[in-house]
Length: 153
Ligand SMILES: [Zn+2]
Ligand SMILES: [Zn+2]
Image 1 (cartoon, protein in one colour):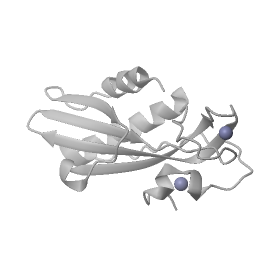
Image 2: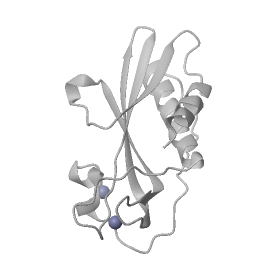
Image 3: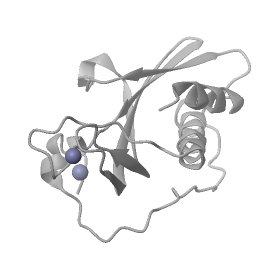
Image 4: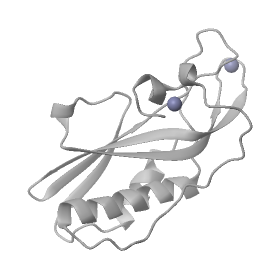
């Protein structure tokens, strides 16, 4: 996953002319007292098993934005939830390969949410839906980091 793309797109959505907003990434879940606001989204992406090389798609890829804002500084810490291969024994959690289009949608939603929630801007009414994948299999809670943390369903 190219985090530079996320950061570049996030910065193009100017939130406030005199406030600095940063985007960071974490592999961990943050506890409630480490953050002020959580914004949860679902997107679609492909995964690839590093053990067997099998790819699979998912429309249940969960993302949490942990948002902190104080004075003229804002930080968004992004946690992207992984999935593991159902064919391999004790397969590791893989990171989704989210398309540029779906990264753009996530960043548009995030910027809009911050403008409304932290700067009391009016809701533009615009909505972005992730570009979904054609999937014939069911979601696998045993192989989803989101499910294990109560994010799905
Ligand atoms: Zn595998
Ligand atoms: Zn799940």
